[in-house]
Amino acid sequence: MPLDPRLNPYRVPPSRPPQRRRTLLALLAIPVLGALATSLILTTTAGAEQVDTAGVVQAEAWTAQSGARTENTSDAGGGKNAGWLADGDWMRYDNVDLGGPGSLTASVRVAAASRAGGTIELRAGARDGELLASYPVGYTGGWQNWTTRTAVSATRLTGPQTLFLLLKSPQAGDFVNVNWLQFKRTPTAVLPGSPTAAPVSNVVDPERQKADTAAFFARRPAPVTNNPVKVPEFHATCTVSHHGPDDPIVFPGLPGASHDHTFLGNRSTNAASTAESLYAAGTTCTPAQDHSAYWIPTLYQNGKVVDPKEVTVYYGSRLKDPSRTQPFPFGLRMISGDAKNQSDTPDKQGNHFWCAGVGGETGRTAGGEYPVCARTAELVRQITFPDCWDGVHLDTPDHKAHMADGDHTGACPASHPVPIPSVSFVIAYPLNTDTNGITLASGNGFSMHADFFNAWEPDALAQRVRDCLDQGYKCNAQGTF
Image 1 (cartoon, helix red, strand yellow):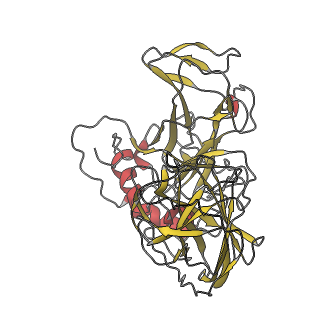
Image 2 (cartoon, helix red, strand yellow; image 1 turned 180 degrees about the vertical axis):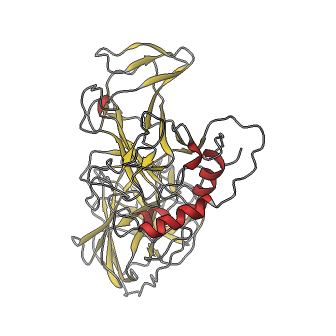
Image 3 (cartoon, helix red, strand yellow; image 1 turned 120 degrees about the vertical axis):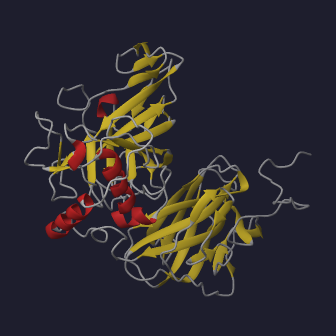
């Protein structure tokens, strides 16, 4: 008789199929030492992480549960995991210390051989209590192929709390294992190299901004080597981190209020994200010093998600003289494009999908909305942000008024006098000869737009702007010539 395909070398089948336990196991109350710290989980590859144990709660250290079993695990950070978890199961943890004020990042370590997927909810006080975080769970490659799901919670709860993990899935069978949870509180404090802590308003301190600008231009640029191309530019290469109906710029603090977005770069981006929480989280981008959040509306073909194969985020200047370009202020937020735009109007970014590669465009889709590409080409979209800032606001109500493009002279207008890097996404989708049936979560192709939330490590950003943009030369992802 063949083995259950869900089994792996670490899950030995018992002589009889285990009977799922649906009754409450009232176990000895175990005080959970959840003292929080600003330490990070350093992600390498699945099953090979270095885990700082501060704030870690082992999944098997429940006070009570329904439907959970324990088994040995090969994963880092714990000898056992809670397994055989299915829709309706739950685990309770008492006396988990959420720490003091500040941004709360909650992570859960999961593995799944089931392709049905589901959701893990983290709630406080009761099974129907305050939702602290929600984690989508899909196939990870096996019951011992571990990955970390992270969310930033908007909760104001502090100190010891009773927490519940609730398991939800559209199917009745087991869908996930859990090894541990980790809680990390980022206190409100000055971030290294940044003008302030996470901004408490959308207006910068003018005196501090003036001092930071002077310090930046006093920085000596690196000598130019290797005969680089004479183009003011550096870049980051990013992959998809996750999806979700959140938008921390347009709908901050309102989870689920947006159309679905494809998030790039920062792994923690959600409705509760702040500059501070982004700074504390990891990224899918190279270089790793770019903790910024980037997002675009999710693209579908015939109702199925199509993720970009790769996204290059270019930082450059389109001004006549880029030498006075300076870094974005920490926490700057902006949008390019218009999600409400459903027609090709001249004053909007509109639909600028094109075909990159040998053969290029070979035709148009039936309605003419999208190009059809040669087999040797692929569907690409480029979205470009302004490169002039008003010098005052980190954001404005329309998320655009604090930004502007250079004027007819090739310089920043008087209303937006500060030259900053122009951000440009180049998004490559794995689509070519069949581009029929494409839609965006925001509507048709004319609604394409992009969001940027700056959380670069300040010194790494300053080095690239000073060496590459100000001197007018092309640098690589590491910021060197």
